[in-house]
Image (cartoon, rainbow, N blue to C red):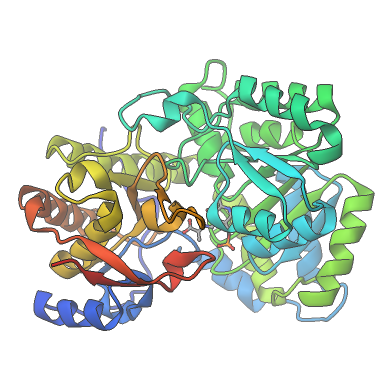
Length: 458
Ligand code: F0G
């Protein structure tokens, strides 16, 4: 059989509220043309993020009832610790409320002003936390990653020559760790190969610098390795994930992605010294070391999610269903980032809206049009998120790609939801000249996309 079916049945449903285009035009205007500011109930299909939006399984819901809410030493913590350690393998397992809390804790614990953190491409909150520590976040993706049409199977790879040059220049004194994000979200949900991880490990060893993984989507990365890298076809996703983590000294994870959590995160470390510093900070702002700002029931759900996400049937469906969206959009001629990511398909905003200049934010404008026309909420990962203005001259530096991400929540939407999305984007693409450009009315200095306000250009 060719058809890959959803490996689950639906037991609980959540109604979607239908809206008209006229209603949506009002909603988005009232939201300052920022999709982050609209009410979720005014969205038909919400592909803003795959983070915290997944559907939990019956086993996870059963686990919720088992949650031990003891302040210290809860049974749920030990289940969580065991589930994380079984995959990650590090000595210290520290729960946090989400990924950016993990980032903040590690940055506060080990990053000094003037430090440099190289990576394949830091996610926006990671970059913001590094910069908040007065350090520099350096993105060193391979050259192929900059070309949206290049079919390199591991576009998440780090440029090893550039990494070596960075390590040689700054040395272990100024590089507290190298951070590799699997899969590379900001670079298009692209995987990192085991060979690249191994070579990164070797460079880190040579320069005495620890290697940390941002593991938000580690299971999808593991499955891509199985599909695309020689020697892994017969290995299970769990074995591959174990091997990935065995090359690292630690990991940060937003467990709102590949752990099917609605909330949750973890810092996993080998270093006793780092772990002690992180735990001290954790107690200061998050909670005691055996719950880290989560409820015991959350820890149960995450422990179970971490097992389920590595099931081969699930990953086969997950990667195939994302590629389904990409393949059909591609057949309509819609410009896309390729290969398709694990958790998302990325539209090329600049190619889609050729009539809109960088200053008028093609990707963002496209995301607004998608909402108005078809009720689809997507997320720009481009000019608004990463554009930087030179404070002295006022000139803008735009990121290499201006993408619109269709992030697919896990186990939530069916194929007909995706058919609606494909049809709607196809129609909009055929009328793409009608997409209006936007400009900033208010641009907050940090993480502007969440709260910025825009207006249409005449
Ligand atoms: N690292 C990566 C690779 C991420 O994609 C995210 C979040 C984080 C860290 C931060 O985790 O949200 O739990 O604090 N990505 C979400 C997204 C928000 O939509 O891609 P968090």
